[in-house]
Amino acid sequence: MEFKDIVLKAISEKKGFDICDYDCRTLTPFMDHMIVVSTNNIRQNNAIAQNIKDRLKENNVDIQVRVEGNTDSRWLLIDLQEIVVNLFVHEERQVYQLDRLYGDVPCQVYDL
Image (tube, rainbow, N blue to C red):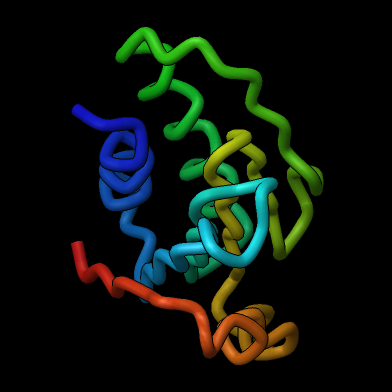
Protein backbone atom coordinates (compact mmCIF):
# COMPACT_ATOMS: atom_id res chain seq x y z
CA MET A 1 0.00 0.00 0.00
CA GLU A 2 1.34 3.43 -0.92
CA PHE A 3 2.08 6.04 1.73
CA LYS A 4 -0.74 8.35 0.61
CA ASP A 5 -3.19 5.43 0.50
CA ILE A 6 -2.35 4.53 4.11
CA VAL A 7 -3.09 8.11 5.16
CA LEU A 8 -6.37 8.26 3.21
CA LYS A 9 -7.50 4.92 4.64
CA ALA A 10 -6.70 6.11 8.19
CA ILE A 11 -8.83 9.21 7.56
CA SER A 12 -11.74 7.22 6.16
CA GLU A 13 -11.68 4.69 9.02
CA LYS A 14 -12.52 7.51 11.43
CA LYS A 15 -15.16 8.98 9.11
CA GLY A 16 -13.41 12.12 7.87
CA PHE A 17 -15.41 13.66 5.03
CA ASP A 18 -15.15 16.14 2.18
CA ILE A 19 -11.59 14.93 1.57
CA CYS A 20 -9.61 16.95 -0.98
CA ASP A 21 -6.12 15.92 -2.06
CA TYR A 22 -4.28 18.85 -3.62
CA ASP A 23 -1.33 17.92 -5.83
CA CYS A 24 1.30 20.49 -4.83
CA ARG A 25 4.31 18.99 -6.62
CA THR A 26 4.51 21.82 -9.14
CA LEU A 27 3.67 24.47 -6.53
CA THR A 28 6.22 23.90 -3.78
CA PRO A 29 9.28 21.73 -3.10
CA PHE A 30 8.22 21.30 0.53
CA MET A 31 5.31 18.90 0.02
CA ASP A 32 3.81 16.72 -2.68
CA HIS A 33 0.25 16.62 -1.40
CA MET A 34 -1.94 18.67 0.89
CA ILE A 35 -4.98 16.79 2.10
CA VAL A 36 -7.85 18.82 3.57
CA VAL A 37 -10.47 16.99 5.63
CA SER A 38 -13.66 17.98 7.43
CA THR A 39 -14.74 16.45 10.72
CA ASN A 40 -17.78 16.80 12.95
CA ASN A 41 -15.97 17.78 16.14
CA ILE A 42 -12.66 18.13 17.98
CA ARG A 43 -12.80 14.55 19.26
CA GLN A 44 -12.96 13.27 15.68
CA ASN A 45 -10.00 15.48 14.71
CA ASN A 46 -7.92 13.87 17.44
CA ALA A 47 -9.10 10.35 16.58
CA ILE A 48 -8.08 10.78 12.93
CA ALA A 49 -4.69 12.23 13.87
CA GLN A 50 -4.01 9.28 16.17
CA ASN A 51 -5.27 6.78 13.58
CA ILE A 52 -2.88 8.20 10.97
CA LYS A 53 0.03 7.69 13.40
CA ASP A 54 -1.14 4.17 14.25
CA ARG A 55 -1.61 3.08 10.63
CA LEU A 56 1.78 4.43 9.57
CA LYS A 57 3.44 2.52 12.41
CA GLU A 58 1.51 -0.67 11.53
CA ASN A 59 2.71 -0.40 7.94
CA ASN A 60 6.32 0.20 9.04
CA VAL A 61 6.42 3.70 7.57
CA ASP A 62 9.36 5.26 9.37
CA ILE A 63 8.60 8.96 9.28
CA GLN A 64 8.57 11.76 11.80
CA VAL A 65 4.98 12.87 12.38
CA ARG A 66 4.60 16.44 13.59
CA VAL A 67 1.25 17.80 14.72
CA GLU A 68 0.45 21.50 14.98
CA GLY A 69 -2.41 22.23 17.33
CA ASN A 70 -3.44 20.56 20.56
CA THR A 71 -6.24 18.30 21.73
CA ASP A 72 -8.60 21.31 21.96
CA SER A 73 -7.86 22.63 18.47
CA ARG A 74 -10.54 22.89 15.80
CA TRP A 75 -7.78 22.75 13.17
CA LEU A 76 -4.96 20.21 13.32
CA LEU A 77 -2.10 20.24 10.85
CA ILE A 78 -0.25 16.94 10.51
CA ASP A 79 3.13 17.24 8.81
CA LEU A 80 4.18 13.95 7.23
CA GLN A 81 6.98 15.58 5.21
CA GLU A 82 5.77 14.92 1.65
CA ILE A 83 2.12 15.00 2.74
CA VAL A 84 0.46 17.62 4.92
CA VAL A 85 -2.97 16.81 6.35
CA ASN A 86 -5.28 19.58 7.56
CA LEU A 87 -8.11 18.37 9.80
CA PHE A 88 -10.85 20.94 10.28
CA VAL A 89 -13.99 20.85 12.33
CA HIS A 90 -16.41 21.59 9.49
CA GLU A 91 -17.31 25.17 10.49
CA GLU A 92 -13.63 26.05 10.93
CA ARG A 93 -12.86 24.92 7.38
CA GLN A 94 -15.33 27.51 6.11
CA VAL A 95 -13.56 30.24 8.10
CA TYR A 96 -10.04 29.59 6.76
CA GLN A 97 -11.08 28.65 3.22
CA LEU A 98 -7.89 26.77 2.28
CA ASP A 99 -9.83 25.18 -0.56
CA ARG A 100 -10.32 28.59 -2.14
CA LEU A 101 -6.64 29.45 -1.65
CA TYR A 102 -5.60 26.27 -3.48
CA GLY A 103 -8.39 26.52 -6.06
CA ASP A 104 -5.96 26.52 -9.02
CA VAL A 105 -4.09 23.42 -7.83
CA PRO A 106 -5.09 20.01 -9.26
CA CYS A 107 -7.35 18.29 -6.76
CA GLN A 108 -8.76 14.82 -6.31
CA VAL A 109 -11.88 14.58 -4.15
CA TYR A 110 -12.53 11.43 -2.12
CA ASP A 111 -15.77 10.26 -0.61
CA LEU A 112 -14.43 7.18 1.15
